[in-house]
Length: 183
Image 1 (cartoon, one colour):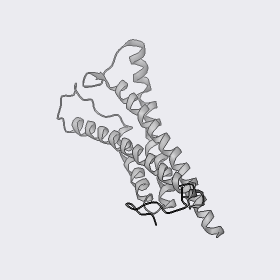
Image 2 (cartoon, rainbow, N blue to C red):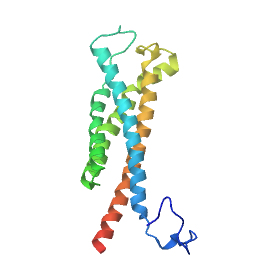
Image 3 (cartoon, helix red, strand yellow):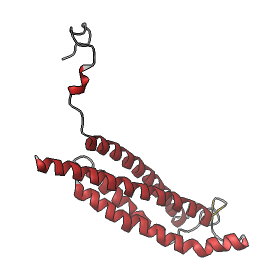
Image 4 (cartoon, rainbow, N blue to C red):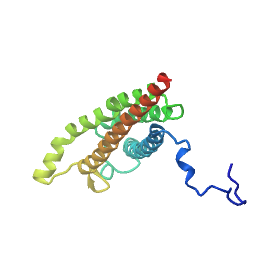
């Protein structure tokens, strides 16, 4: 055991580190991927809170209609996208594979599917804005279609990276499980 204040033991020049135990690579990868997924979940929660705030302001008529437009239809099912994030967070403490798989499947259902529907729902209005320069819905003076497409693009990237990292984490956990079964 090393002494913090005392002299170094005779015969040790610091080059004896190669025989020491190391943390297996799949455990290091698991920690790194969990960290990345948590960051993405926090961004997704921020997007969710923005949509929730916009919906509350619009429905409770806290601001005039010309300031905050009524939500598009795809925004309502997208509010369920918080559920996959909770499953993902619940899978981390004990490396629970079933919660992670459930998170990945429900991300497709509750997050990606509403985004695809939203892009199709808003396409005619975006086309009209592009061709004729006319917008009928606004969020604080900005075309609602433009703002929501920007939000949709960011959300699609967040969910795409979240699924990618979740798949890599799942593979890492399976590698760990297979090693334990071999022993």
